Length: 323
Ligand code: ZN
Image (cartoon, rainbow, N blue to C red; front, side):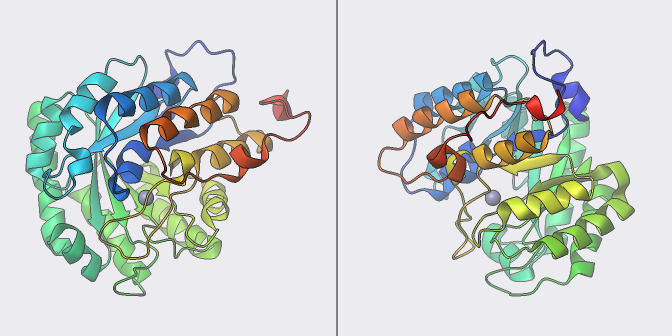
């Protein structure tokens, strides 16, 4: 799905967005904190982000509740989030069963994690990479039968390294991404699940990905574990990537990748792009106000972000850079 499709119905006074900020906090963030955010609180947070202009949110993960009790209300969250106008409601599904439940709940877009690291794949989904590609094929077949209009994305996790395995060969990452698209994914993006990536590596891998997949090269999902999240997003942007995953308050990590922490902070990412004159479609003041809903739903949980703490620069006018 192109970015134009997301925003066609918008009548915002702001400029036409040039990048799509895909918020993953309600899934990636909430699954990595011990506390379970109540369903109503999740919806208040999702609504607050939607009000700020966020137009794609990964709201849940369809996994067994005994594995991730934080996601036990996935179907309910999807159903309620789809009531929000103009919002693409996305869910993570690790297998066909999860995809069935997500589609039954009315999800708009599916994302399937396929790990490039042999060790992480076994730890995360108890499947080899090859078995995961077959699972993706089964999900793609199901999607074709039941909901042909629902885009299916493969997220190549541990694409830049792995806390369990260490180095992940770049050739294997690219080959896996191509296999995912051949198996039926509409696009394949690259995830720095554990925060090992550096900008030179990001440029190299996204350049190769785009050379192989063209417009089917998907999102950049960067973590800020070593403080390079924004630098890596910028490197991906310069290679032509236009969809960026981020998490409000920098929540997130991976329950099966020890030491993984912190997705790139949505507020900081939006600030970076807007300050550069790259329109995101997101109102920064409203986005920062949405943090209150996150904090209310997770009392005591630390939230991160440099821009929210420092405030906007004196005289900063959003969208002014291109006016
Ligand atoms: Zn993440």
